[in-house]
Image 1 (cartoon, one colour):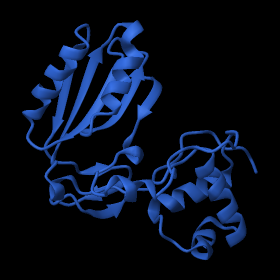
Image 2 (tube, one colour):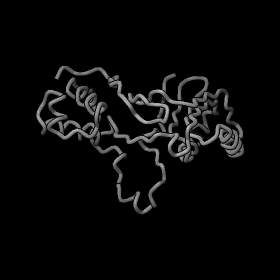
Image 3 (spheres, helix red, strand yellow):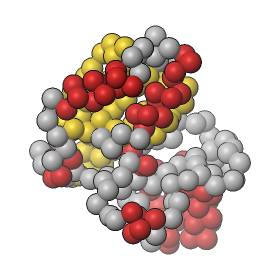
Image 4 (cartoon, rainbow, N blue to C red):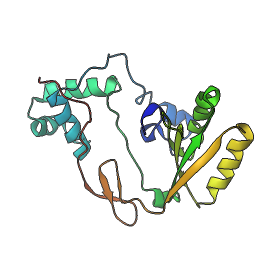
Length: 205
């Protein structure tokens, strides 16, 4: 399916472990800046691949991996993050905070209601990803649940608020083996990585 709009994704998802005031102190790090987007260069791709391997590297080590200077690595990386072309994400092991079940819902939503339904789902605490698509099932939502039965309550609440929405398919995962380039053990902790390659075609610089 082709996503026409990503309403929310897991880099914006919050565990709500911090008080509202403390959470606000973190600022708007996940809000894209005003830098215009552009085609990725080969250096951008190497920098992003290095971040995917280890996002905590010091600038000089990050630069060494990408084959550039520390100043250039920092400037290019900050541009990628500031423009919204890339995003930092600190994930958690779902089983360790009692949300071990991943459920994805595919729904058919009347076009006039699509935006409102997507925004509503994006605000639900258990929802980590919402996208509208160009397919027959024009809405996809992914949730982290405690027991799988929670999905029925969420669907009932969605039906009460938006009666025209029709959930046409559901998938459930009781264990996640890999996510965003990270391999997990049985407890949900990261044990290895598989580098993610940016999909955009590079420019020769």
